[in-house]
Amino acid sequence: MKNTLGILVCIVLLLSSCGEPEGPAAINSAEELAGVWHGTTPNSFGGEVYRQFTSDGTYRMGSSLEELEAQPRVEGRFWFESGQIVVQDTFAIPGYDMCVQGKKTGKYDVELLENDHIRFVLIEDECAERGGMLGSSKMERVK
Image (tube, rainbow, N blue to C red; front, side, top):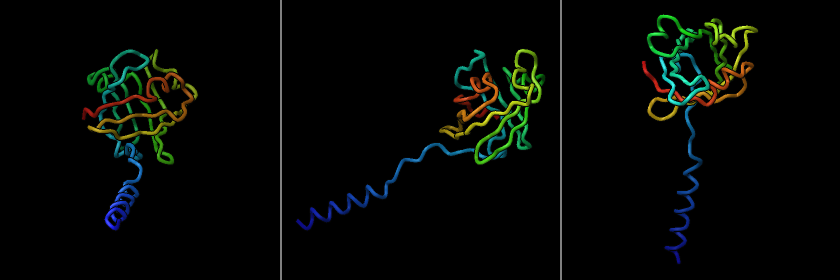
């Protein structure tokens, strides 16, 4: 009986120390996000997506690494508030400029996943098109 009680106490202690499983780590600074990322999930535009985030709070989006460097489709700025990224497009080529007018902003959680991948999770976005493209998208680090 003593052994059974001792075993039960050990099991209870082990189970109580396990806790809840941890979710993805949050990215909440420009330095952590800085780099070039390639989309791994299909987007509403149906093409390849590369995004570059810099430690000074600017970003660019293109359909290839070459386009990203030479003539990005979208440029903008971003900052973090209360652990969430806030994005604002400041320039875009025609067809991608729907978020520039009115200085529309969007808020997202940025989660660091396994294998140096990230996921943007839509909180709210004044520009539905950006929300459809960026919200819940997964990206892998290229540079």
